[in-house]
Length: 227
Image 1 (cartoon, rainbow, N blue to C red):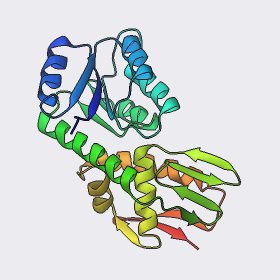
Image 2: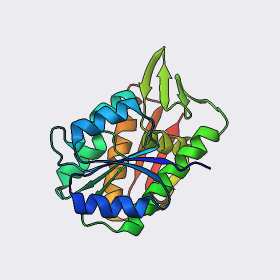
Image 3: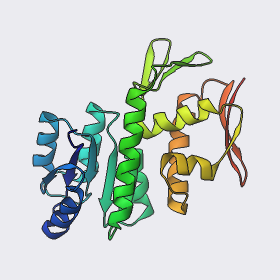
Image 4: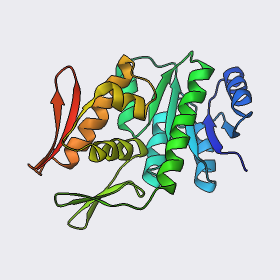
């Protein structure tokens, strides 16, 4: 069985070598040190997951992620960055990233994140092509999109996974811990803040539909209400 392909961009030669060397035991790693060169390669090849540094020469990680999402809504994107400000993390997630790890990071944690994202992608691609009806909306989890009146909104892999989890448990309270463990494999504080960003995105999709809403359940979690 061929190895899954990782698109890895890091301009620190030592860190890039050590990380790629660790990943190559399990994955086929394509490593780049220049943002522009890396993105040109992304456009010509097929990868299963992206790992991006933020501060890169010629084209930074945020710019690369933005361009990737214009072309591919499904591929998982993971930022590894020395930029520790909350605003930088939230910006990365809003651009469509699935996670944001701060340097120095644990190799064990990185490998766990990669496995979670890749396993979820496999489950989605091999699941039955079930379409969900939500009021006037139709959600296609295999193609990561929500459609209403011929207007389609594309979702990222993480947004689609979150919406599917809500729909599989509609009108039922989901604890924050359960959602975080299902989607990120951890329930730490920052992942909780990340979850709020993704829920805000889903709310915008359904904001004009009064019979569909995601309710906050204080100190417990959330509930997708479909009337």
